[in-house]
Image (cartoon, rainbow over all chains, first blue to last red; front, side, top):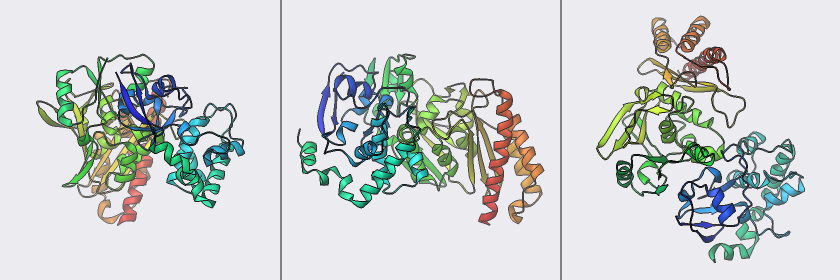
Length: 178
Length: 289
């Protein structure tokens, strides 16, 4: 079947999609967006976390057809990825040393991004709760908690830093354009 | 495989009537795992996430009617005051990502003995509203579960909503698992105090082929509260009564040994959880007087 949806602000189309395949497979293998990682395929690990209509979900548990006409934002959509154009959450993960093998990082970045856009200065229990669906087998989580606190502090100090449209005038064009 | 994505309830029922072998999908948190691992290949998927009639809840006549497509996340944020038992259970489901997708309608459709929504629905005396092109019918949730992962739905029927009485008193939910997130219940207890009807609701999950009420424990607790005049006096609930209540809830179970826990452990844990939840709920009732 054909799937049409908005991904990272762009209208995207995929043909020959199998009705039983996941949104994660579509993103990675049909739309060349390998940022969302494929690990457990059962919603346990959170490494495939993406926004679907503004809510973080496990892309492995969304049937491709359920994304029809909906809006998907993947980790690739949070910033352009140039060194000086990272989302504050991505920057904080780097600066705090919260990345080891990196496999869980995209999911954690999206989950953290969601948390900090809902709750400006979350408490530690709120951070743990928000990231409870994301597993990391390397870090022991302490550096990840450091990264979330760092991003929260930076975004609180400079609210525009967490708003891509305000931080990067081109971001608006990216979203509206293509 | 076919994929149907109806945009109205009428269309959804028509698809289900024409394709009774189509498997409904909402949050996908159960079904997609089966698909990803190649354990199931349904003839068709019937996506219910675009059906607006399933996406809302309404309150009328002391009942909250929760559409089958309302997510656990919404139940937590929007219904904590009206149906606290269900909201507390929803809080223990999966992770934020899972709670953003998973629905009570899906929990009822899967009818797993471990479904977290089931004990609070049983304890509160909820009613499941199901429908087909032939019409709608209302099934008390205690009659809805017919076996392990089996329910009372006919092949052409879909779950439309669940009607939960608005809580008139404290409700609790407790669940045993290895961590706080992403846990399938080893066993669970839903407890409901109804000071208006002077009734106690108690139900267990993951401890029998289906979720079930602990009728004898309910009658015992309600009888003790009435005989001792405690609803009016707000007096303390005797430790011996709590202990006996726990024993009776455990006696209602028919658990198995499996990877998550032994039958003996489940019985023990059920007694502890039910004793605690009744204690918490009674303490909350006393504070409310």
